[in-house]
Amino acid sequence: MVQRDRDEGGRARNARPRDRLGRPLPPGSPGVERIPDDLDLPPEETLVFAQRLLDDGYAFHAHEVLEAAWKNGPFAERMLWQGLAQFAVGLTHIQRGNPKGARTLLDRAVGRLRAASPAPYGVDVAGLVDFAEGLLDELDTGREIDEARLRPRLRG
Image 1 (cartoon, helix red, strand yellow):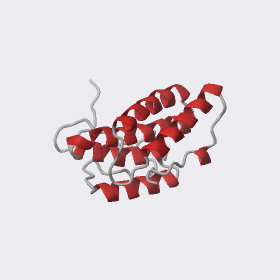
Image 2: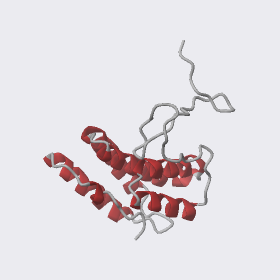
Image 3: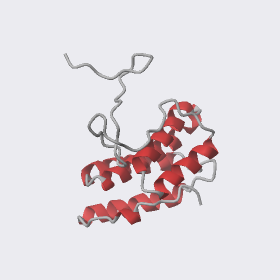
């Protein structure tokens, strides 16, 4: 039987280092600093941190920050944070060259972001939906999307 890495609570956790796109690297390899599993920031700090990661091309890590807000935040904001996390995962799939995965996650993100409108904290839902739909159009044409294009603004 294969032994899996576990955290203190016994939950499966992959301790392998990851590259900037979130892909596991061989044990002992230098990797990108991980987002702590117990991250719990106020919404404003979450958005600032996630934006900085997106601006630096770390969409996978931005997803982890946004996912923490989704899991830790109030139920009433769940659609917003889940939509933002899925948006970041959609960008990650584009970075990894997976157009099918990108389409799936961007479609889900659009639906959740629309359901969260109007959004608190100055989140630019309309701008993000337009951005995602533009990416979906580009994916439908089969054109390669330059990574520099994957720098959305979370707030207006």
